[in-house]
Image (cartoon, rainbow over all chains, first blue to last red; front, side):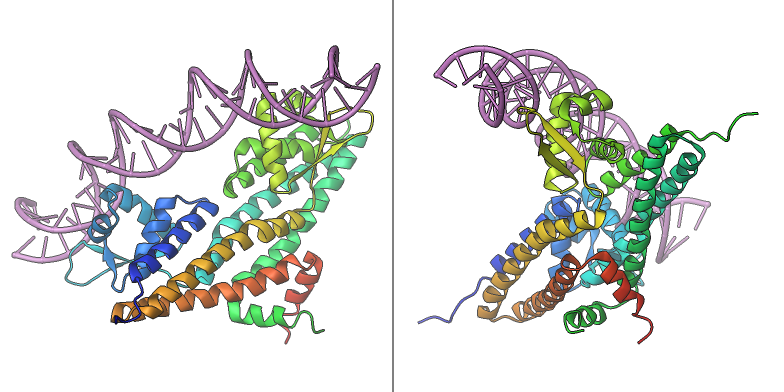
Length: 175
Length: 175
DNA sequence: CGAAATATTCGGTAAATGCCGAATATAGAA
DNA sequence: TTCTATATTCGGCATTTACCGAATATTTCG
């Protein structure tokens, strides 16, 4: 009679596939999800050559992938003393941090651009004097107010731990 | 001497361009951002032919765009009595609603899939008995806990008005 | 500085995507 | 049901993208 036997490789592969899917949903390539998964389950930092070897992708592909994943704060690049130029990569496992960085960089930027556009439109529409302009102005102002409130929310999300926020919303019903 | 003169078309165009950008950020095509912008500033519901005419895109392009935008709850399709098969489209102007629907559908779905994958991996890794499996199990469980907390948060975000939430986080500092 | 090791960039190619217009399907009216 | 008006789907083309491997650039060490 044998031990109860699990297949760890199968378990990891399942998770990696889910990560590929997630990458896709958030607008990244599936290959990036896979590479991230490799790092997620790696016990030690991985070099570009390690990743090339273990993933089967070309080194150039892995290189650009790492740059992209770094931009999204999904991986960190480190160099080790005495290792020359060689870089090592680690996966960021705190997804909440990743999300916060995304809000802080991409979303905030988008909000800024839209707010600026809305302000400019407001100016043009205030100076114009037709009925149509009045209606447009109303729409622009309403949208502006949504963006303003969103900014408050994003601020809260980016400056609090997920535990604090989960705790906070947990009390939502009880007040 | 002339009136102070604004250019409403220019104001609208600026906003539409910002919408194109936003569409891109959220993984949609720029053309969809433009089409949404058309609807945003339209005072009456627009038919497919209207949109084709006003946007310059082919009817087939507009048709698929509308289907996609509908899926994301960015536009609504209506039909008018006595208008035969003709459909009319309106832009959803409540962005918070759009965001909530996105959370409810796409994100929740993604969370479900990842949770299932993590649960399966947990099973496999529990049954295995190596040191490596133990470390992986630890990682899987930590990720699982993040996803659990996220679910709480997403629930809160999808079931409250932005005003209520903005109010709530506004009191965050003062307690 | 020069040499060696490593990373990035770049041109090319196969695959995917966006858009168009024609063909097909479908809903509603007679 | 048949006819008409409208919407959707599909094949094709042009553009873009993802990936590769070779060429170039960069960093560190002697």
